[in-house]
Every structure is written in C-alpha cells, then in structure tokens.
Amino acid sequence: MKSHKGVLVVISGFSGAGKGTLMKALLERYPNYALSVSCTTRQPRAGEVNGREYYFVSEEEFRQMIEQEKLVEYACYCGRYYGTPRSYVEERLTEGRDVLLEIEIQGALQIKKRFPDTILIFVTPPSAAELKRRLAGRGTETEDVIAARLSRACEEAAGMEQYDYLLVNDDLKECAEHLHRVIQDQHFRPSCMEGAIEQMRKELKDMMS
Ligand code: 5GP
Image 1 (cartoon, protein in one colour):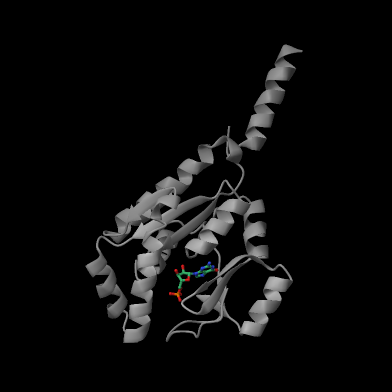
Image 2 (cartoon, helix red, strand yellow):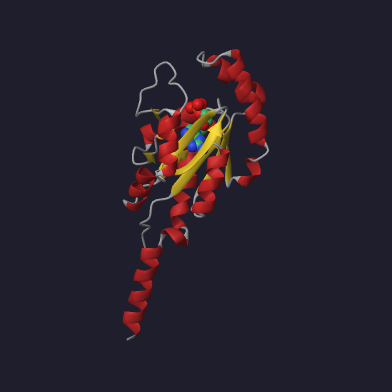
C-alpha cells in the first residue's frame, strides 16, 4: 500500500526564527518538496528577487487577487499584506507533491480551517535572546522594524498551542531532519491513502467473489 496524495504543510514561527534558512536546508537535502512563493506588498530586502523569495506586488494588485479568489489565504503582518497563490498549491498537491507554506499564524489557521488535513508546524529559536540576536544580525532591518517584529512575536507566542508540532531550531541540520520526518509520517494517515484503501477493499471483495 503506497500513499498517493501530497501533504500540505504550514510552517510558521517568529520573524527571525530561521524559517527561511530551515526551508533552504530542507530543500537542499530533499528537493522534491514544493515550496510556495507568496505575494506581498512589502518592499524587497537587499538581495531578494521577484518570483524567488516573493512576488512583490502593489496594494491594488493584491486587492484584485483577493477579489478574483486567486489567494488561498492572506493576512496583514506589520502593516503589509502577504498571501498564498491558490493555483500553485492546488496543482502541486494534485501531482502528489508535498507543499510547504511558510506563513504566519492568521494564514495558518485559515488554511487549517479550509484543509483540515494540513499539518501546522511552529518553528521557534531556542530562546527570546537568540531571536533578538538573529533579527539584529540580519542587518537588513531598522530598529523600529525589529521592535515591531519582537512585539508581533509576543502576540504569536499566544497561538503556539494551536499548532500540531513545535520544532526548536537550534541545530539547523537536525531541525531540517526532524521536519522531514514529521512530514513523511503524515503519509501514513488514512486520508493520504484513499486510493490505496479503495484498492485494498476492491482486492478483498474480488477475492471473496
Ligand atoms: P517577511 O517580511 O519577514 O518575509 O515575512 C513576514 C511574515 O509573513 C513571516 O512570518 C512569514 O512567514 C509571513 N508570510 C510570508 N508569506 C506569507 C503568506 O503568503 N501568507 C501569510 N499569511 N503569511 C506569510
């Protein structure tokens, strides 16, 4: 019996928890995961490329995507809009690929409501001090932005229990392996094996007739 359906995985965590680096480490080791590229109205940071880290769009374009139901979820984060394009997610899941969404908590809860089989994973740094150090260490954010993101982390910490798994991103390689294991285990859920279940039922029926 083999699993056939792709698993939808949401990965959230405080800004600065190292989610981006974790995704990179996971994809380098396991390139078959499909990482969705979100749309955002925030400005690109130095080194970010349109279509790679994000699709950078205007507020007007973002509004149109909402109206045309082109986003599977969206949220406002620190005054900017972020959303997940619907077509990419649906197409990759249909192909049987596991799809990763690196999104914040409001979006995560919208996705879980819409697709109850989604697994929600929260990535946290080992401590609050380490979070601040990582945020400041990026060197791309102003003091104000760092303060806003730490304040947002306080709000997000209140929702950590709503996730299915909590991963501490201390050792990057180890964390990427844990993440991979958690995702692969989901393939053994009956909801991921509907085709195989049907097949087994049919074989048993045929055997009896
Ligand atoms: P950043 O500006 O640091 O790239 O991202 C800020 C936050 O927005 C992060 O917590 C990130 O996970 C989240 N985010 C990125 N893309 C999306 C999206 O498509 N939808 C939602 N809801 N959040 C997103």
